[in-house]
Amino acid sequence: MSDTGRQSMTDKAGSALKPDSQKSTTEHASDTVKGWSDSAASTVQPQGEKSTTQRMGDSVSGNSNDNQESFVDKAKNAVGMGGNQQK
Image (cartoon, rainbow, N blue to C red; front, side):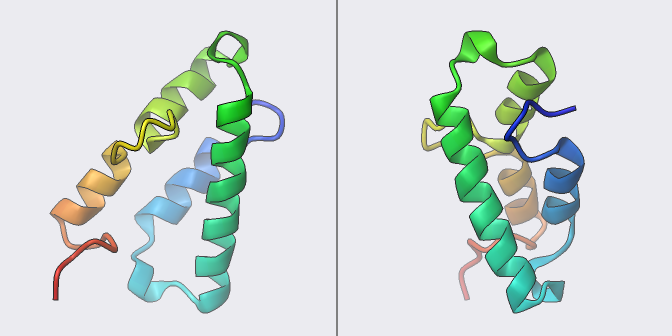
């Protein structure tokens, strides 16, 4: 369960697991907006006020806002599903 105003863990997982090549333009835009708003909410909400589940989710999704690649992004890039592949 996610904290109020935060993207649910189910939504994050579903978005991360679907390859970018299979997403519509609308899905890409929605993912971007949701990511920005969730990141902003993560930044505003003090660590001490986050639920244990939300802290764990932020850690996995890279929403700790320290400019490090998330575990999910690292995994996607490792199998060629991420947006950081070189062509």
